[in-house]
Image (cartoon, rainbow, N blue to C red):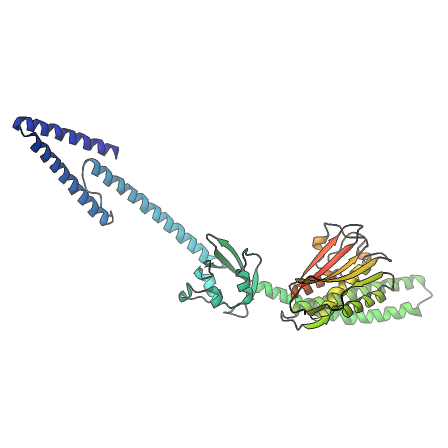
Length: 427
């Protein structure tokens, strides 16, 4: 560009010298200079006209052959044009490859605008959710009317996931996860979890069936062993001891089968709970009486519960959850331990606390206590019996009510288990 300007200055200077020379010969300097300026102006006007025509036609043809500044300008724009064409080609290729990739993966991808209107989706999402081209711009919540999905997408921070049956094929299950990007837009990922759901269903059916099938042989064995240990074989101490040990193990097997059946029933129940208005004071008093009988009055129980606190729930669920906490407090602490049951209604949730002053639990074991069959290595150990399913049952019951379980404990300082139930129609 600078070379073209220098060339222009040289041509103008030479023209000016020629005009001055002609004016000296003719004696009409003003006319010569004016003629030079008019010629120079007309040449630039013609070049500009050629330039605008070339630009208006999209700069597709090679630049016109001009000299000086206009030659540099045409060549510079032509080069920029070629670079732009190459950039656009690369971008189009990248977009095409990205589109091919998103359409090739097995997960559905849906892009939502900030107001949850549909912006884009891949072919997998189209098949999974039954979208049509005319759905673009419509609200997703008007096409998929699921309260769980609506509540999930309404969160400020999209966390967790939602599992729903497919509207296109009810036999399939879909899992929705999402994250925000850009100016609040949402990338929604839809995964087909039908195989996982089927495997989970088969597992639940297997556990339930096996647990029920175990009951009959365990009951028979327990009956014969009780008969043997009650005096039929009393002249052989070794046989008597063996029968007693077998009887203890059969009782543990029966407890395990019973807990598996309870857990299987909880898992197979629908999300719709037939709630009734339950007064907590008599229910908890009854559970404490059962715990006293089971512990042979070796523990000190106290109940701190206002008489007017109610909970909208299913009584069998509360019996399973609180009963398991009391069972754990009895079986995992030494005789003479104090066990306090306390109920607090803070207006947000109803909290049922089961607290003991026993041996406590190590901090590294607390996060795993609700895992199925998990047993700690402390003196809350396998020697005291139990199936390892009690807290898993408690957690599952609380999950049905959108509640949570809080565990506070230190070794040697006892343990506290707090069940929180949201205050929904409790009064």
